[in-house]
Length: 364
Length: 146
Image (cartoon, rainbow over all chains, first blue to last red; front, side, top):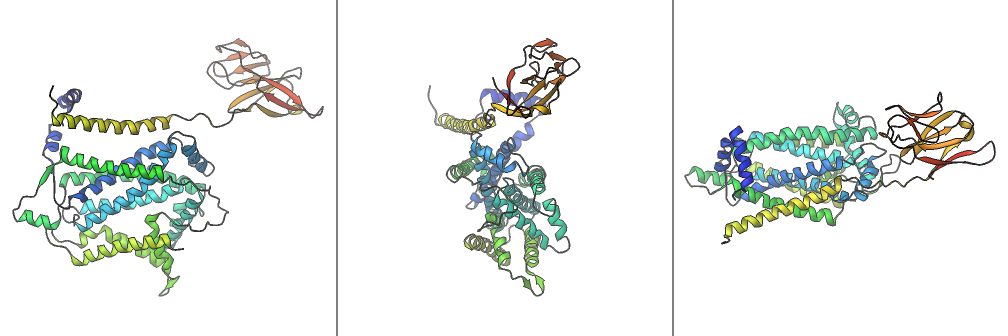
């Protein structure tokens, strides 16, 4: 595609001052491998697109949202009922958040099974896993912000779980809640975390993540890497415009799904939070915490003299650390075959997450 | 002019991108425009008991979303105006020394009929109607739009 004359003039003007030849050469030369697994490359792109949707709709929500116990619920009600297209912006933000986490998981497991984390891409994996944790933090903190009944009690339970951590538990609960109980202070705190602290961390981690991908190029799965090493030429396509247009095409698919969900399945606001009301029946966290929630429900109160909840929480922490360390556990070179143990562990993890999420959803 | 396949596809793509941009920017534009205030317009308020207000004094109070000033004149009569200066919308106050309404921002002066005496205000203050309601000695002061 040839840019129009005006764009060319602007580019020439900039080029004269900034010397964009390096950037131009980079764009012209950059290519992306194309093979039967390359569809998975787009999962990261979709996740990135949804991050963009979250930033844009989040900024828009900030224009009307008021982070206080007295006004938060009413301000969200105002957004969805009085502000033009306010319902759309809020539904997009809620749905996109859920799709974003889903796509981040798909991206994570596709990277895992294609062994894209192997040397030299360990840091890309680590920043990616950290980003997933941050996204879950976004989900947890954002869930409370409309200050409705479900969110209030989910936050009470969710922050309470931190109390199961040995030694530091009580401090962590107080730290998260901004006090002993979930109150307006918690709301203000979660708001600050949601709109300032997590975005700042995300900016840095995402910057590093993307920079590493640009610097090292796309990884190819071991089977194809092996063929490349044997001298076979791997098919490639130019990054611009071919790959970019493919990426954009996937973004359109994501946008279509997102718009359909936001239009036809509006996100409920529920009842305003009331600290003295009994917990409503059927309370459960967002789906991406359901597997953990269900596991904690199943662990007996005491196992080998240890508190069951503490055991569960420690288990999740160990799992998180193991996930972060995957590239340092599987240290084979990029072109070597699969590690059977790790593949089995991956399949087990996916099965556990899927089964327990569904189980948690339907369990009374 | 011969229409090449590439040119045709390029324009199709551009139309697609531009349409997307419009479809996204239109709701965003409508969203950022603040909605008309959902609060109903106030027509009258009860300022308090008449006995609470001393002669030659003034009190600023909320009337709907804007401030109003209730003045009890030296002779005991009540007057009420919007407390919003017609110059740059500062809130005015009663000046007992001169029995005038004064805006501290740019030294605008109004008399007790709301007319401009001195200073920059371009128009008089809008007057409200004041009625006393209730038993003698227990009257409430009611301010209403004229």
